[in-house]
Image 1 (cartoon, one colour):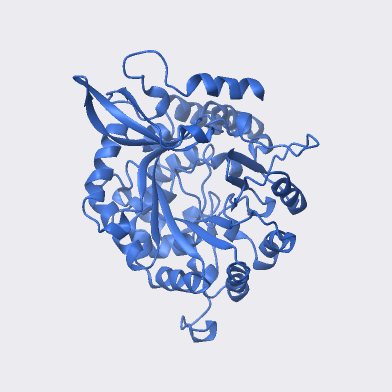
Image 2 (spheres, helix red, strand yellow; image 1 turned 180 degrees about the horizontal axis):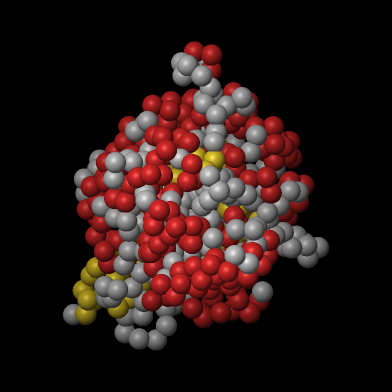
Length: 445
């Protein structure tokens, strides 16, 4: 189907909603003034942005307080602790902008803005010692690239662990313009086979801007580059990016040039709820992207208040397979931002994963999880087991800072309350097998 044959009646235009205009939404009346005031307090700390597609197509406004897509995009009072909420509310009453900003930033710094060693361990260097603050290199084969033009999204997920990118504190951002340095780094590190464009959302960029980065990689003809990945939520939050936006055809053509060049193109699509997949626009956008030769892999964290339901995950994975996508990861909410609100204890997370996994066909069992992207690597909860008469949690590295850790099983004391790796204790005492090596890595930085 050509773009001209897509019958919308008119080309959809992106409209964004922030604190300044959300009260103007017709749907805002369903929230009430008290709820809007609470949103205002939370959104002064954690970033908020929605758009007309999300508001008009994905949220059930007859019951917003119980709607998962509303919680996914609109601030909720519980996303701040009572102490932090009270502090921010008191600052807003002063109407002193400097004091308000200082209070918000002080609270943000308490929320572990860069978890899992992102600042301390992940920022790479060129051979001449130049720090590349717009990149991360944690796992041997994959490096992350943060184009400076992609440090926003079509709408913000309320749980997002990249929230520091959007709050105006430059010292917390990863961003980079220099595609030449990316190419140089890949030449110096032939172990890197995959480049992941992330942000923000790279699909916020115009096709011509994104092409400058992609073309630099293709024209460099780096023999070890096998895969370009794009982390995006555009298929869910603005599928018109691939349908009717003025540069939709150019973006799809760019995808096609990547695959025709013999480089695998993987779209790492974020879908947090099956509702996101049930619009005509999403279905058609998926079909168009796949027609370029790109493969779509799907991922999401497990989120209290949004998707902590095994039946929903089974339905979502089944729908993704039906659309030709590959279920890839169920993540555990990272220990940053509003983790206290969204986090699910690891034992319960494993139960939800297993409940969903048992319901789907083998084609959907490509998914892995529940997985923690922790400081040492991606650690999956494989099961609850008995070891020498003691109940334990079986864990396994799916990725590791040291590749020798990958695939290695290990065990933690059974703990129904723990929601992150740091809250677990090694079975039998002592320390986990990777901790000494991780200390060496920290010291080497």
